[in-house]
Amino acid sequence: MTPPHTARPRHRFTVLATVSLAGALALTGCEGLDDLPDPGQSSSGAAAPAPAGSALEAAEGLTVKGRAPKTGYDRDEFGSAWADTDRNGCGTRDDVLAEQLDDVSRDSDGCKVLSGVLDPDPYTGTRITFERGHSKVDIDHLVALSDAWQKGAQQWSDGKRRAFANDPLNLVAADSSTNRRKGDGDTATWLPPNKDYRCDYVAGQVSVKKKYGLWVTSAELDAMKKVLSGCPRQKLLAGGNPTDAPTR
Image (cartoon, rainbow, N blue to C red):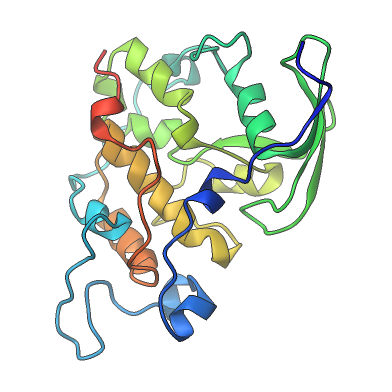
């Protein structure tokens, strides 16, 4: 039986935080889109190549296409919600809550998360108390299922869509009201209010899209590059290797 109280490791995005840049950039972090320099430009105005292995370099390698129609989309196309894909006996939602919350208390079944603290919430930077049945915490898909459907996922097998919907790489515990305002927005239409998290957030979306071969629109790519130009050495997230994505 899992002990009733466990402490989670630091949030996976914190562990994979960007390599700090020298000078003022390291102090300021990511800024709003309107405040960032044009992507790919040096201070002299000349084109600057993205650092090798960076999220910015990976973003530039994503396929650019128009958004496909949403026709046929349904949440059930990605399988039943929060399946036990890793076969540890617990649903994905409880796995993510247990990993990303502090001061976690579980039910006697060893799976169900009853309470915890999200500190900080990545989307708002605030502290949120989680209590099952009165939750202000959602598990968000960094790349929304509807967005994925319109950018390649409708061509996938049922198994691949199910894996995508339950992949920890694509899941983050976040403030429920902020998450619901995001809807199925991509980087071009929505960014977290917490500006300090935007580099991690966009790097996460790039990691997911690269792993699963999803495309981006031209507006989406421009927005990704604009954010990541403020943190050009930001790395992709661990687990984002395309060879790890299921093929069926």
